[in-house]
Amino acid sequence: MGCDGLIPEEYNLQADEPCIRGRAYCGLGGQEKWQFTLLIGTSVDSPEQIDWPTLLPADEVTGWLSPHPRERTLVLDPLGAQPDL
Image (tube, one colour):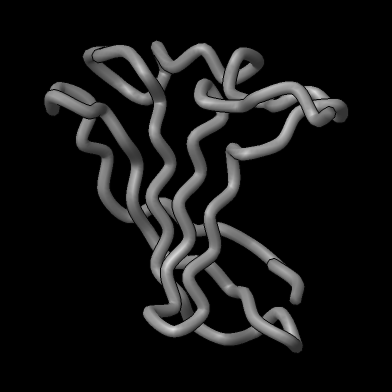
């Protein structure tokens, strides 16, 4: 399974669970059209205020990426990452 890109379409930055939603190109060939949700943790007023470096999971963590192939959805929760034991 691969993912060739994410295209943000909706910034829901003031929601109870602030997130960015959009299109993902995933699947066996990396080109199937999926939907993604990126949970950003805290509310911000604009995309420019997002602290992007904190949303990049470390190499030694897991549990932050939840693919759902049947529904063609992908949930990214980088702040919910756990150590990879």
